[in-house]
Image 1 (spheres, each protein chain N blue to C red):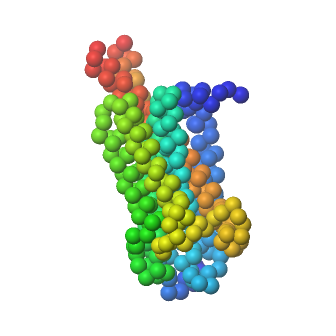
Image 2 (spheres, rainbow over the protein chains, first blue to last red):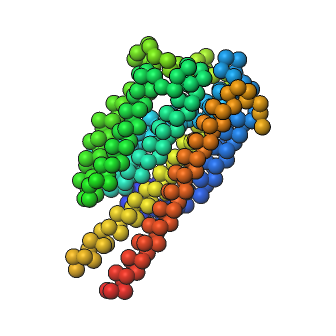
Length: 243
Length: 51
């Protein structure tokens, strides 16, 4: 088995991801549809929250992805800063719109869920506020990529922005623990099984989370391939103009 | 269809918005991937033929 850095070669990355992409996509479809159908049609109402508990199958996985996509971007950005592998910078760029969409889903489903349960669509609660700031960071990150023409400069500056934004990604995750205040409850999932939601909601939730993770992997592979091709095209066009 | 009671609107709205956003993200990613593949092939072909 070769080194992981082999995949920093754009050709090798495209060849490998081309092989696994159909399988990851198929698994994502099965897990996502399975988790959502199971959760929506075959789970009971909660004794306190009624049928709104079904929103958990969208809200928790999307919130989880919102934070973890940024963490993945952070790792990719660090690899770019340290090792200057273009594929890692392009993977971070490819992941950003997916993370932004996940954050938006978490914010919208949270507001829709909050209205009947808390009596308000929005509250400047630590977790909600840090999620909104994280969403703005995603938008800023994407805007910065598209504002700078030189790919390497864009990768440098967006990597720095990603490092700064990581504070809010972590804050979104731990805000409930830091400040014991606000409307948002603690984590729905924990390593400690006692703290988890009841089993009847837990298993479809796990399947739904697996679906969101696999969907992210499939999309980030596809979008990174696209970014690699776009970068190659820009380089070829620049060379053509020079000659 | 399960009986969602008085929260039907909230639950259905959450699913509708989330599924629409996810599908839009998938469609945009696939269309852009296809477009970029074709454009790159065209540019590579042109450069090859021009020597």
